[in-house]
Length: 375
Image (tube, rainbow, N blue to C red):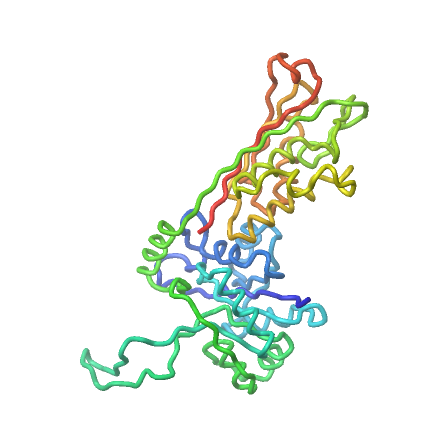
């Protein structure tokens, strides 16, 4: 199986779009760069190249979910820094993408990767359809033939060793990585680009991007509910955290009632049923299984369909054990498993005022709500 690295170049200081560098501007509640990174989740190891001046901000933004590399004086220097950081024995192909192109689709990424099976390099492009003029001083000076001309886009894909060697040999000053590849006589396949795969550069581009988000955003909400009875034991597992208690929880897996409810909430938002559909209790291999397996599968399924978890809320219902001292650790563990920012995860608890089976301390119940967004 081909191992892929994705290099997202975001070290520029361009402020033509106004104010802070465009990759750090907010777009629909996220930075442009965060949206770009999210588009490549699940395709391989993500490497983000940022200015040394932005490194602290990037560390806080991505919380260890990507590899961060300091950029160089030029775009080519930044790409070269990233390429040199990659272990060529583990990575066989690489995608190089502009950090200011947040609307790249998974279909487009797939087309570039597929083209690499037949060529050492591949890049998306759109044929020019408008007339081309030359001009000066506000006057048209001439006409240029547009036949055979394309508008280049990213991600541009390459066999790893070939593009690394090409960058090592290139004197610098290339417009993009395809130019570097051509200088090394690499054959570059053209794949179909997309009009929506815009590079945000000017203030009007942000207005267009906001309109695109409004027209494309797909928001889904799912709910999950689960119950497990107490049994003999000396601890319970709740939201991935071992909590000392005079009893355990009974279940086919590890009986993590909170994680089960959250997993079902994600499946519900995707219209994918519940845990039992994907991990049947009749299958002996799941007996005693750690529930993070189920939650990881649900989160990966959401990402594979282009969704991101924008927030999740888990409520544990029990008289004991006391959840408050462990709630922050539980939220952090769910955040780690789902690869979601910790401030988007809530874990809290309530009692049932000694009413019902939870009030009689016969078991624990959990409710979970999750919101998925595709944009």
